[in-house]
Image (tube, rainbow, N blue to C red):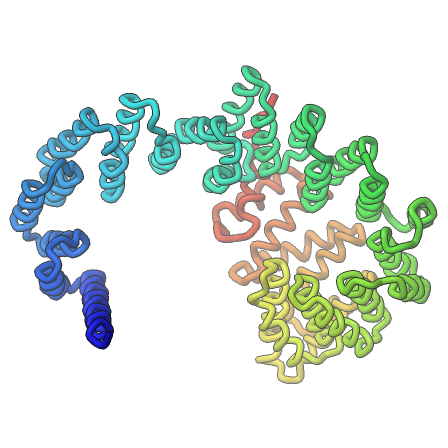
Length: 596
């Protein structure tokens, strides 16, 4: 038994030594120490002559040292001692490629390719070796020839990827579509590949080709599969009504639920396409097979209505909430609707106590931790509105304990930080925000980073944090929807703290409030001031994009809008607004062609 154990330990120690030596050889190679790499690989190969990794380590080290004759000698020996290994012909060809002898290299590549004639099953290893050296033309020819010779072989996936790398977009899509047609379950996998080429820009070459291919196939063969892919494409392009037409066709001809159509409405609303969102949801309500879906649809419409209407219609909105609660009841089945109603009462109608009473009554019914957390989160928001910060912080902390592993918990933690910031407790707020920078929610992570930077930037030069305290107060007023008071306080900051770090932040925030208050000319002036005085700072791309949007929508000056979208395209290529700016710029320029 001891001898067996000793033998196993001995074998493991040898394997470990080989692994360490191979890592050492690779490190030498990667660092450009090719002589040391060569020596280490030769020692490894001597101990294990059949190891191809060690063999090619030796060959590649010789090539880097320009010992091409030695590399060729080793490769020919290997070829002579191997039975039918055409990949070595590619290695020999590449050895000549490195010597700028393209003609000789191509002879070996052609010889390797011809091996497929006799054995189509060799295609994969041959093509992969061509790909290793970025010889995509030969790799594609290998797969194409093998499929012609043996119709049971399917290299559409490999070919699609190669065509994509070659810029042969149409061939790439055609191959992916063949795969999906043969196996519709492949569509979600293919989507990941499509995402590398399809963008929000409907006029881009890839989008145009893909759309044309799908429409042609749909006309010839009306499979639901093509409707699904068109819906996906139109959604990427934010053409939500066109996606809706495809989803309607799918719903009418299949046994699928309305959920995908409702999801589309949510995406339209998030993209601020309220007209499309409304039309889609109205269809869902008409077709809804259950009361729950009718409830969701009506709740959704109320949210859109509040986005687009002013105080004059609030009485009508309140009446509609009351009607829905009378129709569907005030039990836990309408929890989300009641929370929305409470927020409406508190933030829009200045009826905070009524809203709190509604939520506390609802909390008495709640049994699930998730439901309790949602109610407490809404209660805490209203307490912040009332500036009862300490009480709000208790509720936010309770939410974190109720749903520790849920995104709601991270949202509550962000609100703890924001509430502390409103209070003027910037140190504690920043500690919480820095934790949230790594949040799984990108939106929370981004918001946390922005607020953390605001606190940090305005605490270095001004240790008293005077300007920051005023800014936090103005921010709270904006949260409380006291926009005119917030605008006045931002004006005070701009007058008293000109030239300080806070200036561009105050200009941007004030501009957004001017837009909400229906004063686009004042917003325009703020954006122009940022562009003129802070064009190299972090908010410059925001100012360009918001100004372009302002010209495009409120001020109805498409030429000016085009000018500022163009500025983003040429000067802010890494901006989060780049794709949208390019899409809207092309649309204003008239590049976009309507899809039939």
